[in-house]
Length: 379
Image 1 (cartoon, helix red, strand yellow):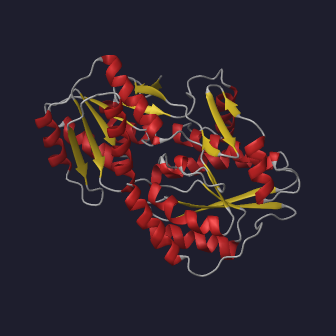
Image 2 (cartoon, one colour):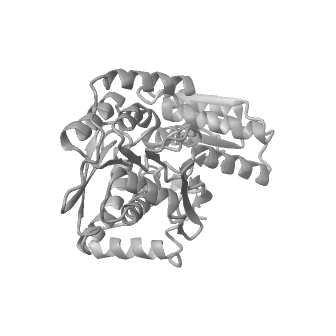
Image 3 (cartoon, helix red, strand yellow):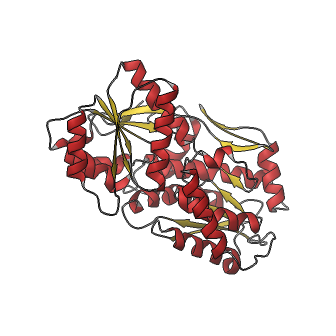
């Protein structure tokens, strides 16, 4: 995985050959410009769009109350279709033409790795990328701020659960790309650390998936549980193929899997799927941030429905806004970084985001939840 990421970073550096100008762009007397290259189309599009809905929900609330020190937040996500080259091109345009203050909620491990050199060169913050890749936690970069727990945190929690319930025959299905390989590596490491045998790995080409063959491989291995290193249509496509067989292992997935998509695509077959969750439960309104999100969602109208992906975007937006407030009236990249590094933890119930001058890891909060008979996550 590290070799692949190095190759992506090198290629993006070549694309970034033209010099960039460092400075504090995107901050005017009345606005703060926030850029985002995100996956808004394709198999992951519906879920990533939910992140932007949740983010906008909070940004709109902040703007309605006067903004941040009188400045309104201007947030306009641009689609990259999960294509690394498009992500780089979008980001260069944001930096050189749009002159954004920071880049927010980029989607994907390889995509984030590709634009990180551009942002570092331009001394521009990338905040809350939607990836749990360990490399972005282990290798400190003062311009990169993570929010969500790492894939390593999720994998450790999933594997630990296998040991607790006595599972001895485990398999993993993963999509053969940067994202899937990152998840596969973390699950393998977690299993080895806990001496849990994980003999079966089945990979799926997300661009030309053969779900029937993958399901057949799992049937032959006969595991008690399958950990899924996939998301979007690749996840649901495999589950449908497996359900057509006589094999019915427990399915475990990572937090990037959309419960809305599972319910929509699988219906009652989604019941019993276990997902890692890296945000507080929406079924726990005693947590103030859950109350706030549900209240603002309800205020949008009867057609607005809460979702875990929206809520993650909402949390990312709240932490970003807290950083902008801590930066003070004279907002700059340096004041923003210093405000988050020295302002103390940001907590929402058990969820805690921590930043310091030596670490921008964010949160390590992970819980497991099961989809119940109503299609709701039960922690």
